[in-house]
Image (cartoon, rainbow, N blue to C red; front, side, top):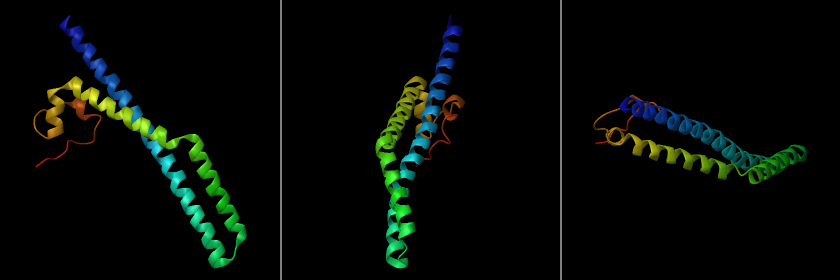
Length: 131
């Protein structure tokens, strides 16, 4: 019976970690998409203005203005920021769940004192160094 509970705990930790890692990957993709659309539209708008002001070239300015409008429209209709934040929150919930699940090992790892369980360390880069 105890062996079965231990195996179930290991399986649960594995599932939570897997789910958390998927949320982290999704967070990075949505973050890139959100920031690309945001800063891409800003860059295109500025560059379009510079084309007209310094070179008098309206063809390139028209192109960059159109790209800026498309990026802004796609970002607004796609809800990239909302999806990015949602994945960040999901990842944080998985972190809290793992901390609750692992207990003292997690507290030791987070404070830099105590145990560094391989199951817990595997989903983070390195334990923080506290003074």
